Image (tube, rainbow, N blue to C red):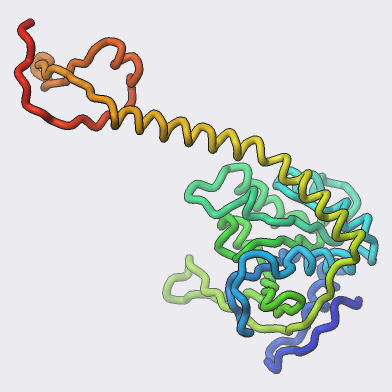
Length: 284
């Protein structure tokens, strides 16, 4: 199988295969490979270290193009912009997909403190979808930008050093004999090469698809921002507002601050930060 021609291969004699061999085995021998294309983190080569604008999607398109039999229609048929699109290609019993491309993963599966349960379930499912999918190609600014469950599936990181130039690193895991429940990982440099710009009609088609893909998630982003701004305004209003309350005793359980009913209804179950100013309370 012919892929983008590498300009240089690793002199590491421990590596018996090159990148195209692994891809060929994934397709012909029922393997699953997850490939992440990044640009922000420097690898072996000195790079521009930019999160965007270096051609991650361009290289991903070329890779998908070759893996899908040089058929641009299949590239777009298997092009995904969110987890739902990916899951749609994993239906049990469907025709095996050689390569699917999930563009800008960090937009819909970012690295956050609490990973949504559905993303965890999807990641677990992907790891066992060999009959339905051979290669999953993802793009992101860097490895740490995507959620941990997806990050752990990555076998190859393709790093864009400069626009049109890439290097390939294989992620390898080793047993940690001192802490057997925590595997050790390291990168093994495979090869580097170059890639051209996309044909204009394909680039235009991609840009149109990208607008539609972003339009699916924009309403949720806008709603979240509106909720955030509303919360900020309410907090600012509360900060500027003076609330006067009377300290009262509640049986044997302690003391509380009594505030006007309208204020209590507005801020019920909310945490208020009150400044203390000694003032004589009115007679009951």
